Image (cartoon, rainbow, N blue to C red; front, side, top):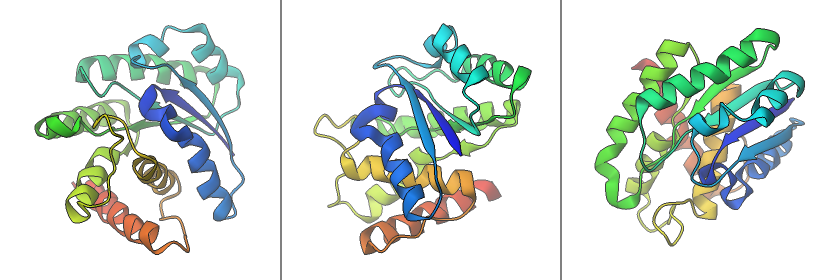
Length: 202
């Protein structure tokens, strides 16, 4: 299986795609991962880049994970940019698109609902699944306040935060939680499972 990650620092921080690959390997799933990520760039940047088009058309990817801006989030830009990328994929490939919803700045939690709704709206319009990382992020944040999901800048993910991202992507692709011998990660997966199931009900 091949997965392409397109995004910015919330994709490349802590080498998150590699964490996802390791989780897959621990669950006996062989995955090749590729990443196109630029700091401070949204999907409106990536949808115009030749390397994006080339990778999508000729990379033979099974899944393409799209991640937009955290700061300065604009739902219309998300939709229009993801639509362009999806049209490229649909033109010649069988790649499945998923939208990776991020979390907000620690000081801007009140903006999470707008971001969540923006991703849900784009997902419905494009008929693509959402990876509700932002929802699982704040649920875990509230249940385990002493476990820091944030990097020291209160914006990016700590290694633990990137692990939550990777586990949420795993569940969103495969439809079940990853198996792990780590009790802390198992508890994290319980939260992720609950959030995704509730999200799908809504």
